[in-house]
Image (cartoon, rainbow, N blue to C red; front, side):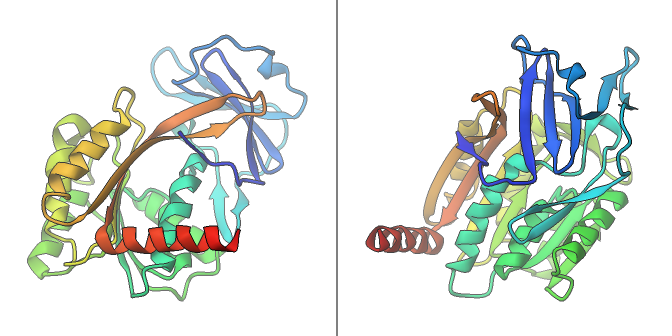
Length: 304
């Protein structure tokens, strides 16, 4: 498991009974988490600094119960990157902190590429990866079906002081957009995708990860440049193991381009001292990117 352990504005205080107690800068939230199937070691709802609890409804969905005054939205920082946090429906806050593991990995690959890098970010949500890649020097095409999330991504780019960087923000069904990009002959050096388990596009298009993921990855291969830097898939789908993502990338991407695959769980270490799993990632690194990564590792050893 790769642990996102460089956060200063975020931490998980405690876990148990299907919930996690989190600190988002100065705000403390208690939210459901499907991975937390163990017994709580403390009464998290009685935590003295707790601002809000997300309560599930028996009829589906749920809502936030505000216990102490808190801002409607606020900003957290990860290094030079800044993001809006806002409690929303379905327990979300607009940011997945564990993805800092991948932000760091992509940053290293882009900075060491020694060439301009264009990134296609699909199911891009509020733009954590978009902000990280722009900050590393890449150009980014950010695609999501939700207008609200794309607008939030633009705000995160602005907050991070990256408004002058080359970014396109597209509200569209990801598959249809990629098909159009292929017809236009547009190519990308890297692809990121963070698909939902299931959902609908802006025009009612159905998405189910078990049947749609592999064909979409195959489709995206046709939008890759002749010398791709990386292809990253993230998934929060329960039961979808990291090796599944690695196999998909090996068969769909590795059959066309030389490079190496990697697969791993991502997670956060809690203040209790346990590692909370937060999904899986599969990463294909093109031959050029792998050589640069090895060279950087050798340089780091020399510095030591």
